[in-house]
Amino acid sequence: SAVYANEYPKFNNFTEFSFIGRSNVGKSSLINSLTKRKNLARTSKTPGRTQLINYFLINDKIHFVDLPGYGFAKVPQAVKKNWGKIIEDYLTSDRKKIVFLLLDLRRIPSNEDMEMLKWLEHFEIEYYIIFTKSDKLSNNEKFKQLKEIKKKLVFDNEDVFFYSSLKNTGREELLKFIEEKTQNYE
Image 1 (cartoon, helix red, strand yellow):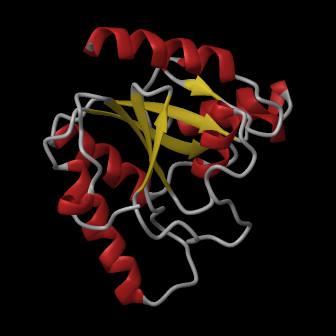
Image 2 (cartoon, rainbow, N blue to C red; image 1 turned 135 degrees about the horizontal axis):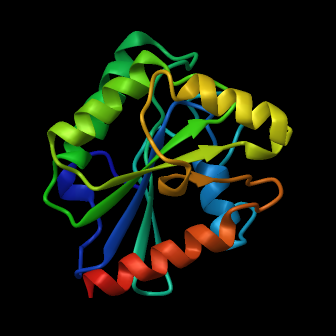
């Protein structure tokens, strides 16, 4: 775990796949699902539990990076402000990274989500969107919800991932994508 750049693990040219999103969107659960390790990344029903940058070395060749969530969390305003600085310092660091922005499929992207997207684009950070909690909606509800989301966010369904940590839906597609990206960076 780290807070400051000088605490980040030695890079060793590993590819970093960073997971960012609102508090309680499922970042830690997704990492646990991908690795098939139930308690690798700490999860909680209470928003704001991840307060540090947590690194996980996977198969001696990539890092998964669990970043603190932004948005709703029952923590003091000063703590939220510090999280913003921690996230900003990490994202603007010169580490080789691909960012996955997690969005809850059941929710319209918040202003904070939209700010994060603008921020990633402004700093030309390679990112991909993962819609989490896809198991919580029926196919009909998903269709309606995507229609609403697309009023605020432009994307093609083929360019995003749909994931359920509970059912591991989307796991194979995301792992294949990560493997391909890892080979591109070697």
